[in-house]
Image (cartoon, rainbow, N blue to C red):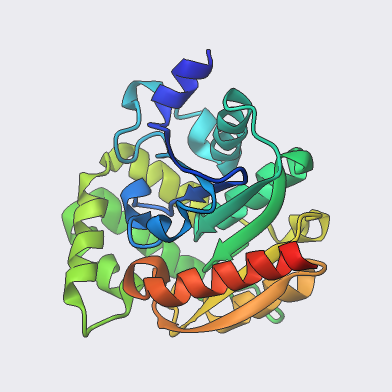
Length: 271
């Protein structure tokens, strides 16, 4: 059974350290998106990389529409990976929706986590008047999902530069667009609905694991107000505002991403 789970999620284990860092990719991506950041941790940590079912080189035959209709299926997969590897006290680094997946997994089994590092997290992408600004109107999200159905390649071409927000490095947007296009459209649409229509604001108060929130500048997917909301509602969390622009600083600004994560982790160890 453990080997089946590891094959299902294309799990890779690297590094030399005794402490474990799990890098979890965001929607429309795969573990390759961590290639600029991950090597900086190999000498000091054991590294676990994986692909969600439907992404990268995961086992697409394991896809179950009912299981993956919500983020519950994805966080259950994370916990199954940790159990298969007999991991506890891991540092979970989650980009975008993976930040919420990490939160849900940590609430279910907190002993498996020592720290959460959340890169561009959002508990809810849809504005809720008058008190919450998620960055999108519900109609905006529905139009994006509709575009996925009608013109998947056009959707990928439109969304990639919006997510990256780095016009000086167009190759990054091109890579993200290619990543979107390489994902099975059926599973991508389901993951998009589970991500962008979700609302997990009510669980933030249940987070008991020390948490770092990395908030990018000019992030169209998770604006400043969202980072502030996360920080306010997760007890003891640390919020760091990045100079990096866009929603994928581990790709566009890896040096700053590495520096902030390491400063947080080693400060936490010293304390």
